[in-house]
Length: 145
Ligand code: HEC
Image (cartoon, rainbow, N blue to C red; front, side, top):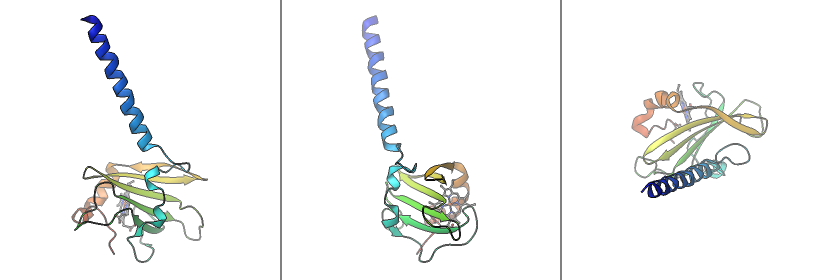
């Protein structure tokens, strides 16, 4: 009996580790520090017509890209929306990158800031939701074409 129980315990630990490894793999950043699911965003469909320059939570010259089109009014699960925030006159990689990703009907929020050639997390979660709630009727997305 004791043996059985410890075997179950070992199995639970192994499965737990496998799960953790899978989660780590999915969240693994690309070389530049941004998550891999943002790769190629500059080729996605742009949601804004002209660069956005209104100040606010994200200040700079902004462009918004979506990995998938809306179906009716909502973006489907798996959609990634990237907003690049560049500083005036700055070329190359944008200074900040704000990301929304829809997982099981709920957006996840992370904003990154660049230091040299690498991005690190600047802010995420509730602070984003507390402002984007104003766009709730538009699937939490402010930018529309
Ligand atoms: C005080 C309000 C406010 C906060 C806080 C905020 N945002 Fe936004 N966000 C906006 C506005 C307004 C836009 C529309 C474009 C613009 O004016 O920059 C926007 C646009 C975006 C977009 C492009 C899609 C869209 O809604 O147009 C993404 C992605 C985004 N924000 C991510 C984030 C993340 C991640 C955070 C938290 C780290 C965050 N935002 C915090 C106001 C906010």
